[in-house]
Image (cartoon, rainbow, N blue to C red; front, side, top):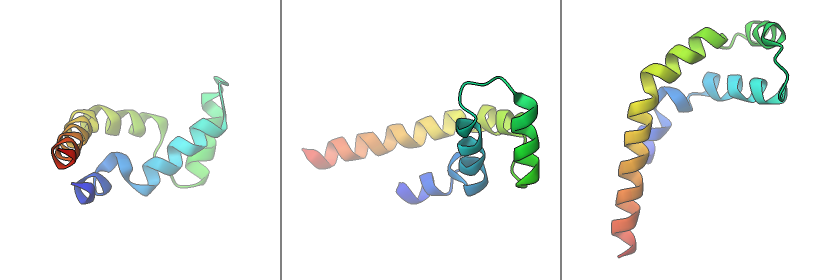
Length: 76
């Protein structure tokens, strides 16, 4: 299960780096600066991150739900 989570698009290195860039900008609403930094680093744009999130959220949730169920069964 952990291998499937690691191979998921939401846990890919470019996506996690892009999220780190966004978090580093804090609560500022300067999407232009964020977009420039993402582009300069060769990371997915804000639009592409939104697409990845929309396409992958359900499968990400399902994988983590299955993982939690397996861990609960292992604890019994």
